[in-house]
Image 1 (cartoon, helix red, strand yellow):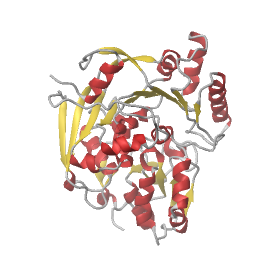
Image 2 (cartoon, rainbow, N blue to C red):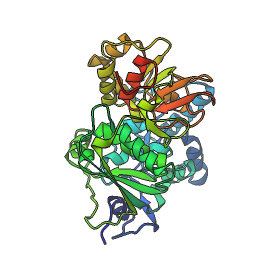
Image 3 (cartoon, rainbow, N blue to C red):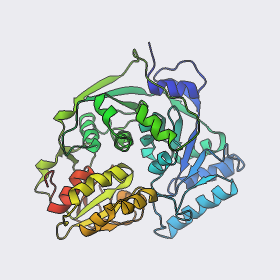
Length: 419
C-alpha cells in the first residue's frame, strides 16, 4: 500500500523507507520558528539543559508578533529576552519592529521564502500548520519541545492518520476559503480530526490562490488536527521559487495511499458562513444571523490579513461607509502587505469607509491589543478562533467570517452576506 504526502515527508525526515500511522519516528526538523509569547521556556531549556548550544543558527527564525509594538512591560521583557537570545546565538533571521520588516509569524515565514515543499516545520504556536499550504509537514509543538528542537534539530513525532478532504467545482460568488474551512470544521467538530493530517484535494483546491490555501491549512487545528497539507502544484512551485533559491523536492501522495476517512464536497453547494460563539465548529449560514448587531469588524490575522483578503474586503467597501457605532479595524498580517495595500489604493478605500489601520501583527486576535472587546460587544472577525474571552471580555462575542462577509457586515451593522 502506498503512502500519503505526510507519511512520505516524515519517513524521509526520519531516514526511513516507509512509515505507518501510529508509528513514532525521530525526525529531522528543517525550520523552527520562535515568537514572543512561547519562546521564554524554550530559551531556558537551551541554556539550562544544553549548555546554551543551538543546532543551526540559520534554521531558527525569530518573529516577535503577538504583542508588538510591545503592549506592556511583560511583553517588552519577553521580546527583549528573545532578541537577546537571537543576538547571543548569532541567529541570522530575525524579524521585528526593530528591523522594520515584521508581522504574523506564519504569514512572514511563507512570504520570506522559509517554507518549501517536503520540509518539516515546527513552532510553539498551534497555527503553525498553516505552512502545509505549500506542501510541507508543519505543526505546532509545546515550548519545551521547541527548546529541544533549538538545541538538536530533531523531534519525536507520532505519524498521524490522514483525512482526505476532496472539494470539486467552482465557489459561488460571496464564498471564500474561510467559508469552506468553516463548513468542514462544522461537519467534523472540534475533535473530529484529532491528531490527524488534513489533506485537501480536488479541482476547487487547485483553483485557489496560495493566500486562500493558507486559510484552509491554518485552521486544521480547529478540529484537532496535527497538520493541514495541500500537494504542491505549479502555483506552489512559482510562489516558492519567487522567494528563495534554495532547492527543494516536492512530495506527493501515492495513488493507493490509505486514508482514515474521506470527506467530499461540491463547491457550488457552499454558502457564506459564520462560526457563532464560542467554537469555530458552531457554524451557521450568515443569512441566519441577520438579527445579530455588530460592534466591531476585524479584518486581519494569519487567516484573514493576507493581501487577497483585503482585496476582497475593498471590493465591498469601495464607495461605502461603515455603519454608525461599528469599529472597522484593518490589520495587515505583515508590513509588506501594509505597504502594498497603501500603494495599491486599498488603504484609501478602507479609510474613506471609516476604517482604522492597526499595526501588523496578531494584536486583538488573541485579546492582546489593538481592538479589545468590552462586555456585551460583538465582533465579526476574519480570525481563526472565537473562544469565550478570546478577543477581550468573557462576556463579549466573536463571530468568525470571511473578509467578504465581514466587510458587508461592517456596512450594514448586522451580520449579513448581502451588500
